[in-house]
Length: 381
Image (cartoon, rainbow, N blue to C red; front, top):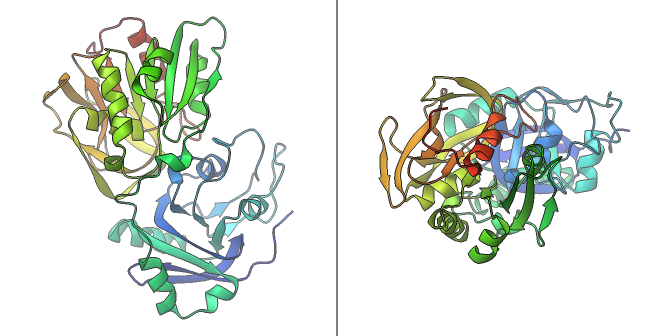
């Protein structure tokens, strides 16, 4: 069933540009960082990805909500987006697994959204000007003077400098058992983990102890007897000092390390590299990434607004030995992977668990297994 009748709504960007439409989801007000996602499918996984904490997501695909919302595909315990922007939502879901409409789910979660605006123009604006603070105001708030709404948007803290790990990490550890014979035992640090990630490891015979980001190094190494994984997550990587110390503890112990997205940035920082904010980031399920050693190109799922700064094409000397950039994004040459040559550690900036997204990079979980099995990390792949 559709949600409540739409009410007037307005979207206001921090540079003063505004778009008028109608409410979608909950009626009220919200603020966050405006970002766009280029995926044509997978909106349920996007909404429930903890990496979107604090962000207002603009869907570039014009028609959203066709398949409704089901109980099988959430990637975490709740919807995390701060707001949702669509052009033409489907009024009724059409899928045998659907339990609710997208509109209903947003209302139940209290997520304020807007519909019937020119998302193409908004996306082009964010691409040209960069991600920025934004507010969505619906119902009576949509009638307030634009200057007042703009002041509210500009009063919000920017994403740069935001420490959001504590908002999304779990309170208590849990275990995802290996599927079939147990080959390895891994500790996965939840910096905003998606549920498909430990499942992908379990498919490869790994028992995964998912642990809070607040865990101490000794407990982490005790649980992760064969390897340590660092997950995706939201916020500015420059603020996550404790997570960096956990990576360094694993490197000091020569425990095999695998990081994705935010975890990739944690490995970069642990190696002494700098992170920086991208102009508008990479979000969606169609980002081309090239593995430099082989020349292989994979179409991959991304959700990141920060990146690691590192020279491409040359070995980097770090406190943990030599490191090289292993992958780059073919759209903008942003660093998309790191490989340590003298300690057992590697990372990628994208999402190999493919939820939602293509499965081109699924073999990275196999590489983690090989690393725990004693393969030399510097071996070509």
